[in-house]
Image (cartoon, rainbow, N blue to C red; front, side, top):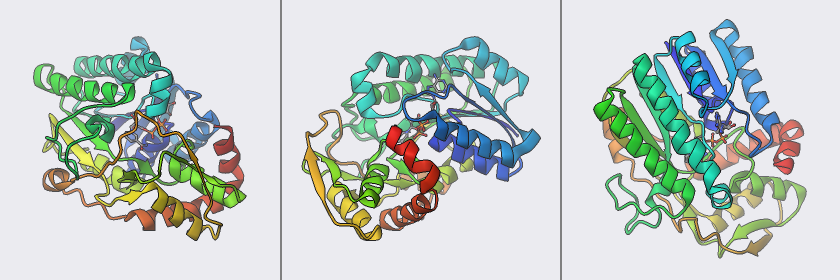
Length: 327
Ligand SMILES: NC(=O)c1ccc[n+]([C@@H]2O[C@H](COP(=O)([O-])OP(=O)(O)OC[C@H]3O[C@@H](n4cnc5c(N)ncnc54)[C@H](O)[C@@H]3O)[C@@H](O)[C@H]2O)c1
């Protein structure tokens, strides 16, 4: 198949591209190499895909908001399926610059959807987020839970889900939105708790905790996220739907810090800072819908996955850590 991965130089997109290439597909990734975090990590990701894919891989440096680039890429590569992962990720970034998040996450998505409709792609798999729940009334979250986004980022992700459903319903583009619950693993975004805590512990510095640290997260390992995405390549079972993609496991931020201190053999030292008002207090996924529809079966527990991330971090410290520190 010919597959376009937008945001394919980023964390989740590059892992999806890796797996598609392993399976023999033709992959084009499109990414603007945004400087939200050090673009050297993104160039590393593109180089990996290029080494693995050879002539089955192409990279386009460009923006999803640039209609001509999107149309040309889809047509030139005769794209069958789009994994749409390009975004301004991150709740805090959207609070600082809501216009940027809106422009990329909603205007960019509409540009891709329109081009997908005109080309007649078989499916578009959209990256949504658990942040659309805000502070929902009961845990774990089911897809039909009340939605009350707390940040500009979350609003853009919910808007994106609605756009995808509408393109499915009236423009005949099969779309699926996946609500990811904080994804982690090798080459993850630097500005997230798991990377920050690991870097701080290995340097012998205190870990920075926003608020009281008793907020909890359903952290999802990248391998489970890639499995969910790849399951959607050829099935129409989830078209027009929204699915939770979480680990269904859960940990508080202080417990996470304790675990990382333990696996790095470091002192457990914390530094508390102001809570972030736009963050949800807890996230926890009910994945029964994804289990029923696409046989999704999250296999990596948080403690196990974080330990294996720390192993990866140690092995890749030389190139990754300076980029984490600069981001
Ligand atoms: N990582 C998580 O925990 C998580 C959780 C929920 C949802 N998501 C969503 O999953 C997707 C991937 O997230 P990620 O963690 O891999 O983030 P990431 O920042 O590593 O990847 C996003 C990529 O999009 C690219 N990009 C930004 N603006 C662009 C533009 N205008 N045109 C083309 N490319 C552009 C960036 O350069 C980056 O490489 C995003 O849509 C994000 O909102 C991620």
